[in-house]
Image 1: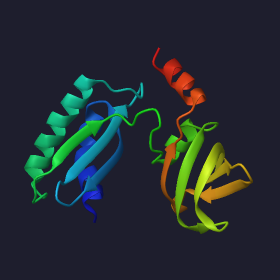
Image 2: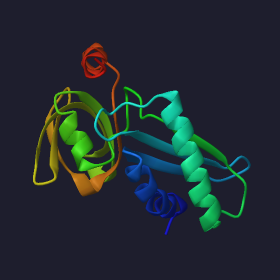
Image 3: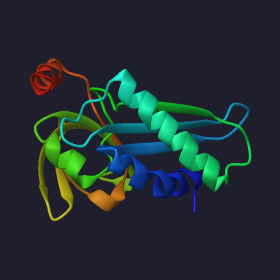
Length: 162
């Protein structure tokens, strides 16, 4: 099991108990190891500095008890931001009608990279309208995806924060 998956399994219950939803866990090894955790409030989708501090303290305590990371690392806690990653199927559903960049695990229609509008989701198949075609991508084929920053997305996110 990869480190990020193991960390996610360990910290998710604590983060959820605090009223937050884990968006993504990413671990980068190397000379300066980094553990990045993205979370958002389960109801509002927002996060402030105090929330990050509280999550950081909780995650640090939980990981110290587990003590499976042998090297020291930098812990980063953040909100997903406006141009957030789309990780779970519900993320795609929430942002239907917005533009996204998607990378697939295998070639589909001769490419692994797609950029376009999220049109619909049906039985875990995500339909995207690119500049030249409409593409259907199986959710399980998606390696990584994120929203593209646009005026439309900024206006929508401002409406969510009121």
